[in-house]
Image (cartoon, rainbow, N blue to C red):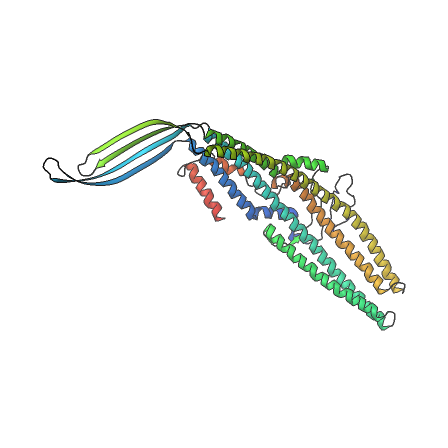
Amino acid sequence: MFQQIRRAVSAGALAASVSVFAVNAANSQTLADAMATAYEHSGLLEQNRALLRAADEDVAATYALLRPILSWFGSVDYTYGRGRSIADGSIATSNRDNATIGISADILLFDNGATRLAVDASKETVLATRQALVAAEQNVLFDAVQSFMNVVRDTEIVTLRVNNLALLERELQAAQDRFEVGEVTRTDVALAEARLAGARAQLSAAQGDLMQSQEFYAAAVGVRPGNLVSPQQLPYTAKSIDDAKSVAVRSHPEMIRAQHEISVAELNVERARAVMGPTVNLSGRASVQHEFSDDRFTDGASVGISVGGPIYQGGRLSALLRKSQAQRDGTRAALHVTRHGIRQQAGSAWAILVSAGAQIQSSIRQVDAARIAFEGVREEAKLGARTTLDVLTAEQDLLDAEADLIASQATQVIAAYGVLSSMGLLTVDHLNLNVEQYDPEAYYNMVQDAPALRSERGQQLDKVLRSIGKE
């Protein structure tokens, strides 16, 4: 079981130590091990990493619109004609077959900044998507913490129920022995039997809870739980509830994500205005046409600048501008909602942590008092001063107190990591877990300038994607 925590939570200070379960060290698994394994095997993280790579490619695809566009074209034509001559009235036919092949080039010279704004919006979307990945990482790690401590808690409770069952079996045997010599009545024996049956039912329920926790652990971490070692100390979180809220507003990924989404919305408004302006394109074309019938050919080239812009589209562009402005206003309002939600989450997590620490101190005193009471009642029962019911009641009080202590200790650990999560600090980097961290900038740096498929970097990217697809 946990060792007793000696310092209470007071004035916002946290108890600095928690106890350790006695397990086989050779096959033990720590909480840090569980979080690292969950990070390495999470499908949710893989999903969000793929979404981030897709957002990276949006930047490349939009950036490519600022570059020249080269295309080739070709055609083979057969023309048949028939007509009457005005001079002599004869009918003549003609057949022509020719092939054309050429190349064209187009480049955007000016579009009022619309494409450049689209590139900037795509970059902000990438930054927002990176924060979504951090949020997913926090969820994965917090699920690992919860599942780990649930297994630890339920394992201890099962052990407690097993020990209680053995104790009640001895109490029943003692009641039967005393009944045979006439010291107690049949009622005392029935009370012991009823309490023993109830203990067996509670043990079955506890074992069912443990099985459910093990399944949650397997889903969250990716492997079945072994011998789990409860953490010896709580992670450092914050000095006070105000400190936790302040850090949360600055560091939480959902807050940062909302800020980047506002930037995207503002850029989209400017882009909607820009598309109402003129565009200028430079284009060139070169081609060769060959006639098969007489080996004649014609080649040529052209280059020119085209200018154009919208005059009237039925109010569509104005509607799109107003829509983008409404979306911007909605995104700004969402930031306020997100800020209040994050502050509330941080405050609630802190309250749970402080409450769990106080509950632990009370439970420790309750367990000590209940144990003394149980031992005293049992000795008094041997002298005939207490009934079997008194003994069973005292034993149940001790059992309940010990179960409450175990649950409070697990809740405190979960709450401490919950505070970290609410502050945006439940990450592999902040916890310094022993894993190979995913670098969200690595792929972006390879694709941001849109390398061609057959270029050296494009081939490297193709190998990277093939490798990811095989995992």
